[in-house]
Image 1 (cartoon, helix red, strand yellow):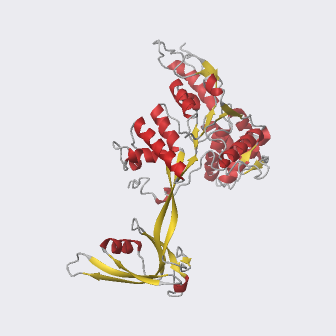
Image 2 (image 1 turned 180 degrees about the vertical axis):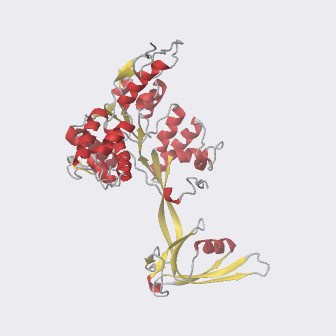
Image 3 (image 1 turned 90 degrees about the horizontal axis):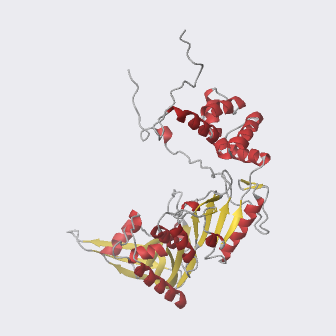
Length: 445
């Protein structure tokens, strides 16, 4: 009888898989918080002391708000530490949206809040099930008041599951009800409480207080909400389309007014653009102008190119960036890893994946990392583990690494394979080599 077929969705064993990314073992920059001096190995980072010191200085400037409107380029050959998120795209509209997503606006708003402990809730429902009326008794340590409730407020109370003994907050302008927790005075009402039950003190003083509420949104969110062709729902669908420049100009003017009046605060964020050499000359021109604007984020770029052609032109330039743009960026360079650093990184990687390596296996992986690349050596740690489990071993041995190396090609062997095997296929000029290359010429005598 054939075995039943189960899909991935039906297989319980495959649920809850953990993502093991190339940088999942990195927890920070590994520098001393006071002196910003890099440690030899800390928070998952090894080596690259100069690059990490430079990155720590930039991070401190970002925190102090002293680097907005500037650009940083992290440059180095492939296989070195510099990979991060990619937000860049090939059109100026996408870049504009990315820039404005990276700029936050913290809006201050004063609201009348009713805050207290619920003493009693009385709800009177009509026989027909129409309008509902009720009374809410709420108190602080100093006073107690009864409020009349309508249908909308009763529904909100029911939705939030508010009951006597809860400490709640009611925004008078919007009617929003927030349950702050359970009063300490009612902590002995029940023998059993949920693990997420939060106990708070009964508020003091007046029931009605004025509170300053901070709303933080990005400029792009304000653009979408105020664009009639898009609307608020476009934020959830992700399809915001093109927003007219007039809308953005009006929003910039309004935000500047809020800033002058003290109603809003501008928070310049950070925009990461990985593989920045993939942008064309039009995008570089846009970024150059955008960095000079009053509302500009910190732009951090990464590139692994040397002298290469600037897309959209016939000119060649270092890192694929125009020279006038390259002149205004702060450049952080990464260096090749030493053998000892590669060995330490692979040991950390194995520890992150909870894998035990024998000394011989680690030494072989280090050699592979030197010759074939650190990322490839990191990848075959997992495949070697599966092979060791197949032979019921608790440790990954050198034979497991050797077998993984034979099974999975590194970039160098893969390029060689393609170059050799390409001759067996029909090329662009219609030529093909029918010669037998996998053995001696056939003897027909």
